[in-house]
Length: 249
Length: 276
Image 1: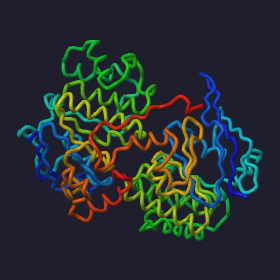
Image 2 (image 1 turned 30 degrees about the horizontal axis):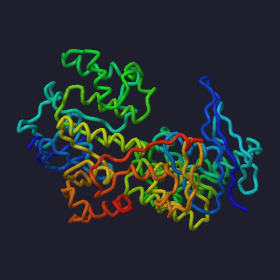
Image 3 (image 1 turned 180 degrees about the vertical axis):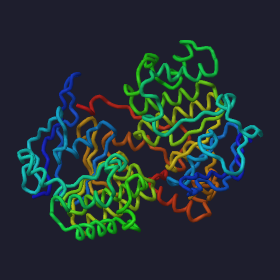
Image 4 (image 1 turned 120 degrees about the vertical axis):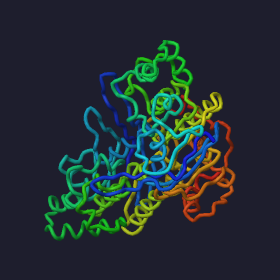
């Protein structure tokens, strides 16, 4: 197993109040697999990704990658990268695309070449002359491509995807999902992906975990999802609410 | 006579970079029914909705051959006439509660402001009406919500507060701009059933603006599909899945489906002639 999460709990404390965002969730992801997390907002699915990156406090349980407990150092960021939901908020508005893409290389002391930046852009289907633009000169879909390019600069093995297409139009969503699938195939990436859209998760993932109120409700294979073989009432209701996303809609 | 009639609506912006035509000749009529306007970002659907309330700031200009609401000529109405229409007769629910509610005013104060200022209702009556409105949108603990600031509410609650606010004056026409796109599927279903109920029981007209074709197909009676400022197709919502126009078909085809194949999703090949 590449990623092993065991009994993970995340508790936020504010003004003496404890909010248990994630409670005792376990999951494991094989190398080169694509694993999906679904649930309504507040179900803790994004918090799990943030806990892996060190952006949320882990209050219990463990996260191991390649069998080793994670430490958030530079070696970790070369292995694991994240793409955030909102491409309008996740790129620095006053940095050019060139600077955004160069920064990971500079931090890690890797050779910073023109070629590395132009290749990163063409790999995600953007023209090389976008290099000296600012985020506000790009559309939402183009920005999300830049965010994906940035995540891939350090050649990670694992990509954490937090609702990567929910801010995009249907046609742009299709292009972005196709791009992600192609990159996964070409580079042998492992995906851990969060979405509230069952159809997107079904298209992208081999296995899914349904979450509610910070707890794991049910794990399903792709086949079980397509044939509606869920056993818990919540997973069933989520499936029923997505009835218009079925193949014969 | 229909409730709202719009003929050949054009919205243009004269910018330094040249003239931008956001809406190019849109015509439609609306009775007490649910009309959906769908399209991608930049298709002009929001601008169409805002034009009806003349909520377009300079340098934007609204032109039309006709734009009448219940016999009132919206193009020639004075600014004070428009003010008296906005709210009591035509209301609009904006897209994002985070940006549309006043962050430093309690929900209760925002809900009662219109009643107190416009209708000169007494404070106690205004509060009672506001609580009724919150109940109508199925907020469980209206007393607590009245005393809360917008940041203390979840997205779904904020959206319902905005709908409640628009419903207090009992408008004849509600324009809802992506009222559910910030919400989860389950909460989305709740908000839609609230809107649906209001259309049925109060006999309201509803313009429902969304980029989500499946949602519109399920929820509306009639649908306008917009592309680059024009209506490319108008059809009954139940026929949306069998749309004729290649743009509408393309939009439907590029959606992933549960149980679909893992092949790359078809991309939308835009034809220059659609925009003509």
